[in-house]
Image: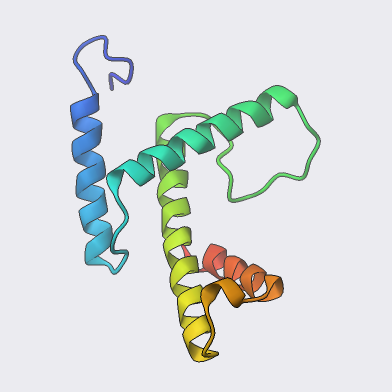
Length: 123
């Protein structure tokens, strides 16, 4: 697989793949996730993983973080992140509606609980 554009440009292929995946996610209820959001999440994760590896820190390893910096792992982590964000936003909106309040008025413990729930919901 040619990820460095030496044989042919890969951007059109990646854009098409991200668009198709975004549409597939919509078919499963994850509406509104844009292909560009997956790309940006991947860039953030790649930068974070690269920085973590360079720092050589002895911080506890997060089992949800990719352990390698390759395209497949970064892409899967980015998709997972976008799915978690979608679930989190939905959960916060539902909780606020149930409690007859605004999302902005939900307390930090409620938000933390929703974040944990969103993280464990995505498989």
